Length: 259
Image (tube, rainbow, N blue to C red; front, side, top):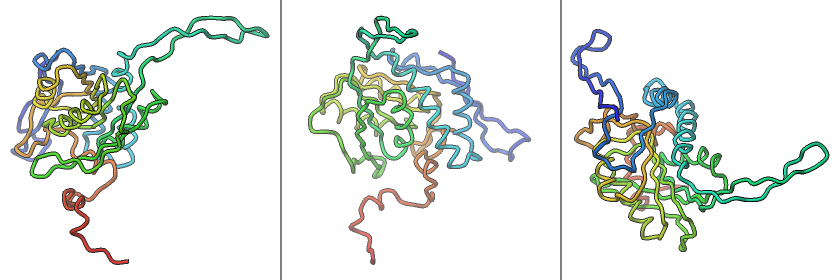
């Protein structure tokens, strides 16, 4: 794996004393063998577009979809197939051949809100997938579930958890535990950016799950944000004002409405 490239420097191109992060792929050698970090140059370019504060909401949505498609293509490499008999039209006739068909029943598990921006790309890859939403918010850094649309009976063989950013991994850890209790056989996490700390926490707690990630950042601040990361992906997807208190929005009983 490539070593982490994170430099903090002073440069004339930015304000004096401003911290500048030169991003790269942090080493994931100690994060388990089930972690796959993409090295595709086009993906690296698209992630830079997602990171940039100059990227507008509409572009962010489009590029997140494109990025998810590529990550999903890599993540689905482990799906199995079985042979099927086909006929192919050749001129006025049909000839027989053997093709392949996916074996596993796939479930997509987007974590709201940022996971919503990743669903369409995965459905283009695996259109027969079920989509089961889980909503999470943090209360004093502790993840709290506020929405769960998993079917009562698990009829899926593999579940792909979709979340744009994996920071402390506490939210994804909760979702993995929910899915294991649900009874799915195989779990695969897809995220655009992860912290090395979060990856190590997740893979140590659940060494049997798989993780596909675009890039890995080394630094996490005291609030649990990845540095440089890409900001709040949910806010950037839907142009949400940054002063909204997500926890307060969950407790609508505290709010007065007039009609």
